[in-house]
Length: 321
Image (tube, rainbow, N blue to C red; front, side, top):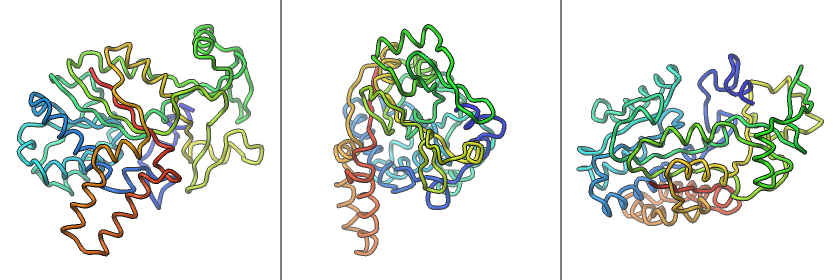
């Protein structure tokens, strides 16, 4: 999976379009109210603890920077004074992506807003950070595990070899006999260790329990192909399509708890966005726009919170230290 996504000719070796012209949609590409509602939640946290107003708002896995820009836009709309105290940053390692982000941020704000770039969260020196991500944990490499064996690929053919002892021990602890085991959650969480105070809010699809089945699948032009479908040719999809799997949120939570975090909330995306105030924001929008624009935005928000679309499938995880 690492080679498929991040290798020399991997899927993410070049900048990818998200949305209608790409291979998949995300909540961020569906509606700007997604970012606005998260910003609304951040403002509430600052209202409860004034010291947080001098911290950082950080996005990880920002693509072009749509989410952090939507959040900044909402903060400017309701509490512009925070733009004088908050600092903004994106965690990104790839130079090409950074240039895309800088270009987009400039198109939104010109020189009025400064967004810094760091290669790791551990490089940010601050007393407080509000960190947000959307669909990053499903993009971590994983091992395909079954009956104490892991999958290996040779000439685009999947075969099975004995799993490492530590992975077998981990799977027994979590009662996993078949499924994906993410690689890198522990290292990622350790990068947050030196932050004195942090709220980490992340959205992704998956569950908090072990399902004991494979969920690995391929996305190409908005079509889904199960990895083990005998009718697909992996060699035709390798590197030019997205590959993903359902997140085991218990694994994420344990990795962060080992680095001083506590679980604040785990719930569906629909419930989280409603608690963050997305319906109230839509009602405010309705009072200052045309009926046509209101109907358009209401339809986009329905995509975010409808149980049959994104609302229940996607989950929100809030961890804090």
